[in-house]
Length: 475
Image (cartoon, rainbow, N blue to C red; front, side, top):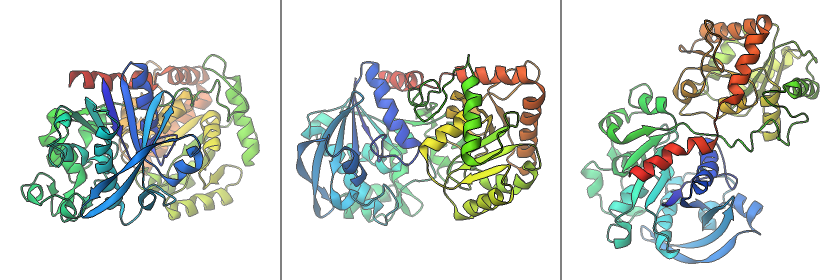
């Protein structure tokens, strides 16, 4: 099939989180299955810096953004077998970052219209248009309204994937005329209205032929008031077209047997390298080199969503145990300060690296015995899968993708790939950590079996892309 994937970011060109990982991996896997997949992304200044000498200029055109006529440059590069087109406009995309500007609505209104008009310019009319998150969620609506007059576009089926429902693209309804050059009829008739706002995510959910989320549990959770971010009534109404597919990870990149960031490689059958990586990380971070002590790793954005308020609440208690804790990440300054304080006051037990360091992240996955991820909500989560790939057993809150990917340890038959709790509180967090520590100290044979189970789980995109391929075929 012919498939066009549109998104605001995609690895290795631009990435701020899990969305970028998916766009970097899913199309590559679909190409391996024989589909003709193209990707369209904004051409950020960071892309120019890293790939400017490799991209090819295909020409330019103009697009209407309300009353404005804006330049659209088209750049092109084939990466990992995936033809990738970039929408170039320095005014909108040379900002030194991907998101966070007051005119993000205008920037991505421009991108969506430029991407839709690109299909005719490059003579690629897809059978499936797959858009991701609110930044491209208006495209199914625009395809059926503003661009409905284009005969070639009428057979296109659309899929919207929700990576994080918290961000919905809520704007003044005048944006319909100011940036999309349309009347307000579709706002007043409720098609794209939620409350008093134009809501891009609402438009995408309503107009897309199918809606997917990045885990089965998250697709159910967002239909409830607790996780629906205000859109749960709409999602319950549209649940006939809602599906949840677990994301994958790039198992070539996250591979303990070949990872270039590791000083010692290892496999599920030969774990000697994991012990050596633990010693190397302890030495690098100034922790006592004790092979027997359980090492707990955390690699994350330090936010309330990730449950770090509960971790901070219990950290004094946790550090009374004979453990070592390594935290890597940036985020809320309050969490950064508190973790740094603990690192200074427990120098033999804890290191807080408040920075973004992909190489150190890989070393933590490879060296840690346990990986703490107590997210308050988690649409899918990738870190727990990466940790399991390296034999680090996750300790997670049972929500979203964490519930779908981590099999809780069963003391009756000894099965599992990690540990979990279903009540996000300090008590249950510490209780579950204690359960893991007890098993680590007292039942080494069971612990190694859990490590092997975790390392043998197939989280590759070759497996994770099957449901998407089946959905496209069915549509």
